[in-house]
Length: 591
Image: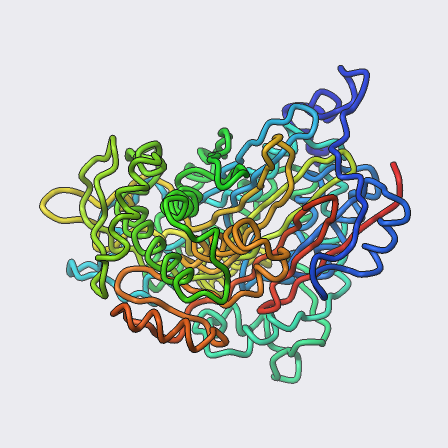
């Protein structure tokens, strides 16, 4: 008989628990609520909150079942971290094209009792056998992008579950095993295929057509499941039952680990992940990376996440007059595009795993350096801008990262005012297309740079043993001038995440839009020598960008999926990106 999993620190001793303090401080999210813009939040929720002015529980996530699971935990007395475990467990089942229990994540956590903002780093790690030639064949030739993604070499040691277990040990108040029941029930008894999952499984993505994926997605009559039909995943149910009972060991040891390693080791192009790599994996805990911006403070995940990229865009824009403009002003979008290109040039060149390379974070976010980059805006033409030389910068080789997309984001508030902003991913659509124990395997190691450098100077994001690849994930929590949390959001979107999150900050803070209106703004992703503009942008803006000599193209990248909440002048709203499926679930009952 397997003993029930217990975290290293009991819930009663965890920071934020009741024991050890005579009074639990409750975040001032008692609300006099209405809507900032039509359609920006649940109108019934806003009216109820306006009458009763209560603290409440809130979950914003990509799938209704996931949001419901999280809210159920909150209603049972759980906190935001407890609910995050339940949400991730269901998303791994119902959004496998975007996330997996074998994947990775970054979690930004605000503790309402201590007022600390902490980042939990669950990024996957390369195996000990990884070399700079990880994605080269036996003849010394670089593998094609698709071949690398679908190879066993693309799988890193999973990080999301160990990371959540660490966060739960530090802050959780509900028993770990109780957080997995909805996912187990849905997997065993059946779940309704969501629209995005149904579209992805019936798409032309090669990862949806591997033997394992085909077997999973095909009914007894030989036809593939479609959105709205009921699927079962008994293997996933057994996996989450083991994780519920054993904690991360239920994933990283025993029969689940054996299934993962067997799938990684299968041909063609087997990978080198071993049990020793799984045993060695440990999540990291670090202070959030925070910087001021136009009267607010933006806190996000530091390297190897890309919060530094978001903050550098804002650092550059703080040297411009973008705040006095607005979303209909072509010059505003020109400033945003150019600031993005300059910041991406720096991020792509300098950022890697801080355990292995030096990312000059302080230099990149130095206002004086931001001013030098902003001064380049008028003179930066169609050619890709080179990286700058911020204070403390090393001299790595050039970057060649080709990052695919397959990610999701969710936000949670509990009644005590604790907040989770978490981005989680399996990397490509359905990861590598390989499966084990009911889960798709991640292909996170294709986030490494290839080629890996020149003249003996490896790229900052070059692969290596035990190294974490750079991630574009950039979950944020925003604080007002008095240090109160007033917003939290993030997005999927591959390397476009940095631009998606920065656009939302600019729209909400600078242009005074509702959060939903900021999310709805057309996306502009400017990186390298291309400015990708989403359909629906004002033709005058497109014409102005072209008039500046920029190479403007229709956006062909992964859609945004910005989810979150914002509080301004006592008015709370939730925002769900209309480009994807997402819901907000609220509980306005008192404590």
